Length: 211
Image (cartoon, rainbow, N blue to C red; front, side):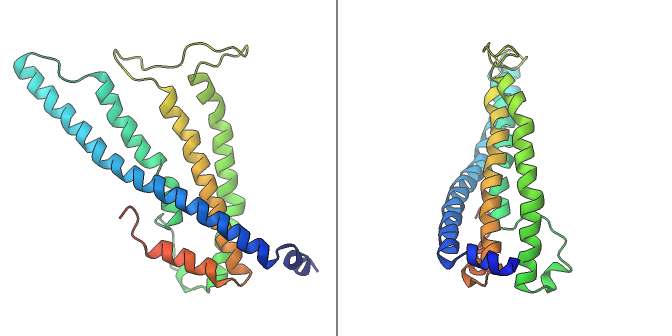
């Protein structure tokens, strides 16, 4: 009875609409994931300059680097991970214990992934956003009385503002949440017998992450 009701609720047109939504989310994830790959090069470049500037500056007696550039280096390093979470999930590049998983049927894998995504990953993302919201608002200067003050900045001289990088924590959870929903849609499509869901997932797995 429940299965029949679920089948009636999720008509083929509904699945197709959900898959189109999934594809849209996937495209955004790929764009942001590829952007995060460039953060690697930029982080190395900034780090290389900081090292060279430190030693050359000592030799010639000039300050060629700054706390802002040093903090920029770890800001970029943080962005690599924060913006890459959703991309890693999409391409199944995360670590998984698959000595049993690989021998299961496609529908059984989809069922386990669907349940794990719906009951663990999605609530985790929502919890992460909820827990991070207040500290981020405070970092932007939100006060307990509802007014706004100055935003949080680095305690070091010439340091960078803290609020923007803290905001990226919420952005990262939001992107991961969106991709988790996309994955859940694809798993659901497999469970409903739509080969397209499995084909999309297999294509994502075979594509080398951050190629």
